[in-house]
Amino acid sequence: MERIIEYTADGSATLFVPELDEHYHSVKGALTESSHIFIDMGLKTSAAPSPRILEIGFGTGLNALLTLIEAEKSGRQVHYTGIELYPLPWETVEKLGYTNEEQSTISNEQAAQWMKALHTSPWGADVRITPHLTLRKLQGDFTSMECTSAIADHSPSIADHSPLFSLIYFDAFAPEKQPEMWTQELFDRLYVMMEKDGILTTYCAKGVVRRMLQAAGFTVERLPGPPGGKREILRAKKIPLTTEDTEDTEEHRRKFNDTNNLWKSAQSVVRGPLTQLHSFLFIAFLSNNLYPKE
Image: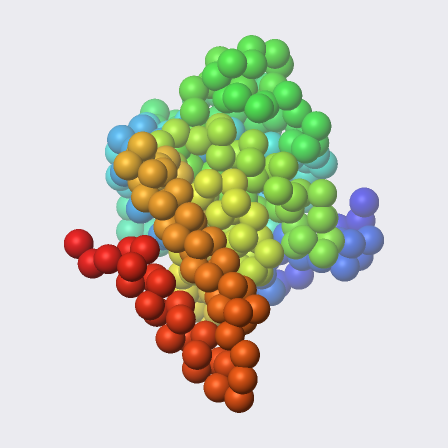
């Protein structure tokens, strides 16, 4: 698959794939986008003392590098699992010239060495890249990996001796380019693989994606996109419902269905030129008697 180096609006490079007519990063700023979506809106907002991160789409390794730099700055221990079906050769990534945006504590030379370590480390094994980041790269198609539970499956896969994930970087190609990566089944699996209060961030804010995340069980919020880039992004959080929450939800659903049935009954019972007004009055009367104020 051919890949062409192109430069984005913030001066950082990305790769263009003619076969897919798709870029690896936003043309409005590769570095800006990754920093905003996955570091600022993801890693920095995670309360996990030692985050376990899963990246869907390791790609150029830019997200991993930015995570490593943040881990070194914050002192948090990070375990990073990256999945990639088509790994890039180091010779290609090296030409992208990714460095450290903030050179106050980490030099460009150090960042370049870390990037090389990320790409040249062996696949399928835990590799300690720095004192604060351990990397595990997996080559394969996530949609066919045996990973329904991140702790139950001990085959050579994403779940190999790994507990639940506290953070997921969902960075697959766009839904129209890679639709198999944006399905309800896939988001359902990701929900199971996350720990309580786990966070998933993605650049895609399409309504259909938001609804699939919600259907999987996530609490989803739209957030402002990166400066000069997409208007909105999505952040999803796994907040399991308590028994009380579930009961409240069922009660609201029952009341909604009851009211909906009342409306249909009113329309069938009441006739005349003021049908709509009579219907509303009829519903109000019955609702007041069915659900009196406490």
